[in-house]
Amino acid sequence: MTAQLPRQPDHPSSPDASQTSDPAKPGVSARRSGLLLLGLVLVALNLRPALSSIAPLLNDVSAALGLSAAEAGLLTTLPVLCLGLFAPLAPLLARRFGSERVVLWVLLLLASGVLLRSNLGAFGLFAGSLVAGACIGIIGVLLPGIVKRDFPHQAGTMTGVYTMALCLGAATAAASSVPLSQAFGDLWTVGLGFWVVPAVLAAMVWWPQARSAHALQQDRYRVIGLWRDRLAWQVTLYMGLQSSLAYIVFGWLPSVLIDRGLAPAQAGLLLSGSILVQLVSALSAPWLATRGKDQRLAIILAMLLTLAGLFGCLYAPLQGLWGWAILLGLGQGAAFSLALALIVLRAGNSQVAANLSSMAQGVGYTLASMGPFAVGVVHDLTGSWQAIGWIFAFLGCGSMIAALGAGRARQVQVSCEKV
Image (cartoon, rainbow, N blue to C red; front, top):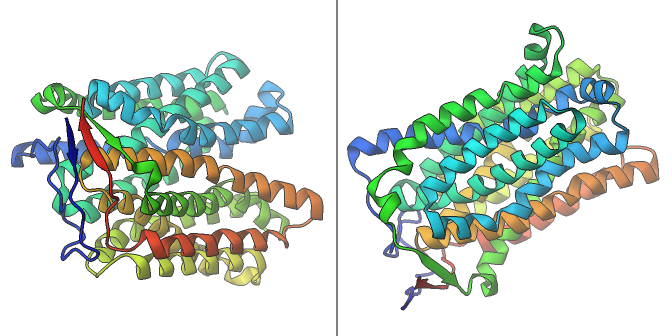
């Protein structure tokens, strides 16, 4: 049985509402919505600590395990690459078992990966990082579909809420991993292994969602034609290019600032402050963007703020670095939350949202992993950081070009087939 989705108007009257009937939408009761919201926030809190907790401890980990510089670099790149490589599994698993149950079991697997990487030496470290990256990639794909299905008229607001939680998890892990390690006698294993606790807590709160009636009886649909849709590719390119800038910041900004004269502690504090500022724009940008005709202007403004912050941190006098870091945080928080919001807004129903999320994050994060690599190559070739401004400009301009298509108030044109 194949049900063709009706064509959407170019400019829907309410871009924050679902314009297409959702074949998998069960409805959310008022009693259940609060627990679902809490569960979404706690799950989102766990989607970055495994990535951001390793960088502050990397020197200690490398010294303890005898890792080379290349091995240490692989350790930071591997989880990010896994975000893209394992994202396509998400809709397949959801179609077979249901999104809620997949989130639950993958969340428990994430907890196991976090625990593994703080044990069994170098093997456990790399194997656990791979498992954690794969789990984060799968869960991250499924959340937009759940938001689209259960909160269709608050898509922008809800996307902002869980994006804010995601940023909060990243900032908390980056800031507290070293103090946690120091509190237990400089044991880096504690700084990395602690993050199993919030993962288990999130799984406990999410458990009722996995056992709900609609999770057990949900119809399964296959989405056809997504990879041939131009709008889907524009959303994917925007996701990948803006994410590439984000992972350049995570991986290289402290090194840039240290070479410019900042102490390592100051550079780490500035990065943490920039991430914390993202909470403001991550929550507000999707809500504000869905009040207007489309999201193009909001995305362009977010990318201009991001580029201003990047160029300021790279070239401006050191005295004004905190101001540039704040601009960078506001821009990147808005850019990322808008990328997730586009997945929800450009999809006609939850099944399309889940598949578009898989495409955008699978291809996008794989593309994003190339940005930090390019920065390292350019730095090695030139011996300085000055030339990486061209990489910033290329990725930023590319993001804005993709946004001119992705930000239009339209929806991807695909069909859904019941299986």
